[in-house]
Amino acid sequence: MSDQTYQLAALVIYFAAMLAIGYYAYRRTSSHEDYMLAGRNLPSWAAALSAGASDMSGWLMMGLPGAIYVAGLIESWIAIGLTIGAYLNWRFVAPRLRAYTEVSRNSITIPSFLENRLRDSSRLLRVASGIVILVFFTFYVSSGMVAGGVFFESSFDSSYLFGMGLVAGITLLYTLFGGFLGASLTDVVQGVMMMIALIVVPVMAVIALGGPGEAISAVRELEPGHLSFAGGTALTTTAVVGIISALGWGLGYFGQPHIIVRFMALRNPSAATAARRIGMGWMIVSMIGAVIGGLVGLAYFAEAGNDVGDPETVILTMAQLLLHPVVAGFVLAAVLAAVMSTISSQLIVSSSALVEDLYKVVGKSAPSSRVLVTLGRVCVLVVAVVAALLALDPDGTILSLVGFAWAGFGASFGPIILLSLFWRKLTNWGALAGLVTGALTVFAWDAWGTDLYEIIPGFLVNLVVAVVVSLLTYRRDEEIEQEFADAVKLVQVRETTAS
Image 1 (cartoon, rainbow, N blue to C red):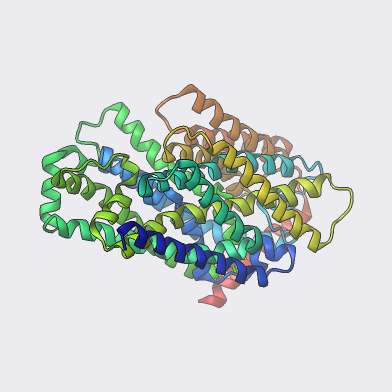
Image 2 (cartoon, rainbow, N blue to C red):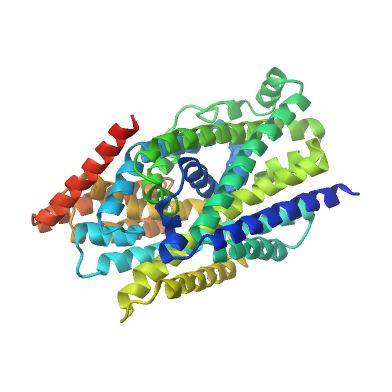
């Protein structure tokens, strides 16, 4: 058999496994809460790997190695910022959010939590949150479909549209029927595949170059600046702004609905401790592998006398050249796993925004759980179709598409989530004003086109506006005060019991 036949066989096995997991999850999904949140019974290991896999997307397997390949270690500041942000998110937000969403009328989406937490009788906050989720997730899901199209185009010389359609279709199938549980369990498998691929491919490339010393020397000889965290030049104002912007990616974690919804699905608040350790271990190993892969890829292709073509395919191309076709096929499947895990998670959260946060608000009657599950599946389909239409004509790199959506969520929800969990005086009007100004700032800053990543001004503007408006509109509410105290107590009790 040809190499391509082996690789296609590996992909078929992978696709079949994902659909089988989706069917398994479908059999275990009966209620609306099951479909949206897996019945709040997600084990620590599943939450950790699911959050990591749905977080990283094609960015980890394609975007980051490609950026390192082109510019060197200066691009690794994004990885450093993300690692710090992820740790803080797991350490402080995860247990408090799990407890508070249960105490606050058993909220199963971020918008419903904000409405319940702040007693927003106007319902404007819930509607605005749902709209923001739909807008930015449409961009986000579209970026994943672009990554799928680029993957098949570069790996199998197929058409971009065929690859994009195949990835979108398979992901849609197991998400449509398996819901949150299906997305989470497939994420676990996909997360493991991603980590193994990011260990195996760089190690094989280093061996091919003669060892770590030879690989570093080869990179230094080709591009000395690639081994510098400052890009090989003096720290100019532009370089400093670039580093600050890269570190600013870490701010995004506090507001990513598809990540923090995993916290809400944990079995209890104390489960966040084990999940944090597993998730951070996975993330650090995978990040290091992606950075090393991008660096050694530069030396490997120079020595081989080949041109990688698209830098974002450096891991894919090295896998095909260095590994047995079957193993390379599973590495290619790992790249698809990175893309599909994120798309599935984002489709579920988008569906919840449409059903829980928009339909329920405008609906005149309360539908049954069975009807809600059906509506959830219809909404998954609708969001997928819209995102696919946007992906028909890809514009920009995967990293830039992901970057805009990441900034949108981080600047819109990040400060509001933190304030709602840790500040008693946040009001519904303060949250609404902050959310809207944060989102608008991201759009305005992106249109302005400065070097500073738009998440930073968006996050700060949101924070200031939310605090100022809350102080102006704050009225003490004993029910809210008691609920805040109950959430804090639940975290403390569970942490004491766990220890």
